[in-house]
Image (cartoon, rainbow, N blue to C red; front, side, top):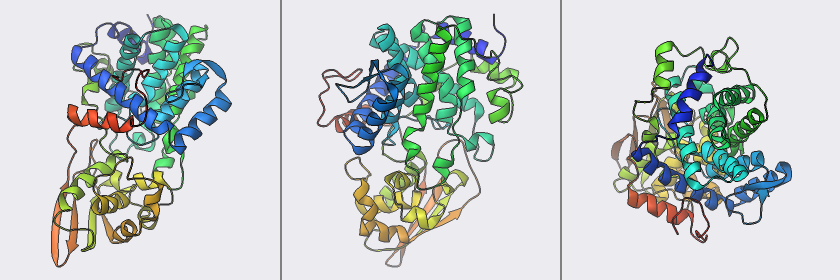
Length: 431
């Protein structure tokens, strides 16, 4: 029996795959279908074509499918990278707000890559991805990023995703406890995810950060399957991931809770994303939609946005955020998304495009945005106000959380993502 957090995780994860609660199973199917549909929507856009082309050039031929392509088959690590990038490329993949991570973008690609190696069916993929998602959500919730601590400087999807992907792939490869521990240790040897691409502007690489984790996790599981022994205390040892990257070890009570097989699954709090932009912009989009009938875009003269520490990073520097030069920057800009929404209504895949970057009406409204930082933060969505002034009238709306998508809304999103695609051979997507 292996000591340390990795051993606890392995002893929880191996049996967990055979006793997934029915509500988790049902939700997992919805999230898998959502992720596959998003990947297909990305695959027909320039960003998706670029991802697939680079992965094909660097990943080598193999047995693993690439979503959205009928001709490209890659080695498992290359396919995991490509599929994770495709799922995340449109900023529309699922998210756990408290943990601040996108679980399925990492675990589904890892599961598909491993499944294509061993011939596992969709049910096996769903079980392994469910365990991987739950592990990532539990790890992220335990870290509890507050906007100021060490966790706030990492893309937790990527950093914790290495572990989630390693366990996901390991389950499908049939690894035993010792090998799962090794795969976790090997994953920590690769783990990274510095968040400067999110804090700064100009980078187009935000689309791909989950891909590094999916690729590395699959590689870790394959190395463990091949007999390589990773460090058993890679998570919580003296130079483990938690002490080095996240400010310390989990205490005993946190570790026990992390692997409690009786607790409600954290994955149940994961939500499908409604709009193709950074999650921190969503409360402001929702608030702007409420204000839009009262202060139309052609009459507004001033907009004052309150932003907590996390959201403020999506507002600075204001000049760059109000005139983004890349679509990725636009989606990570609260001022721009407020302006776009006031002018055009709900952001959609069809409406929020590269052409939006030169939309004169949107840029004018964005130039009217002022930002006031509140100095507070929370692990979930921000609660702040937006004051819209126009024609001598001021309307103040609260930027609260967005409600979960209803089943009907989820089906409409699926149809929009798959528009123009054949769903006959898509995994997890009903024909």
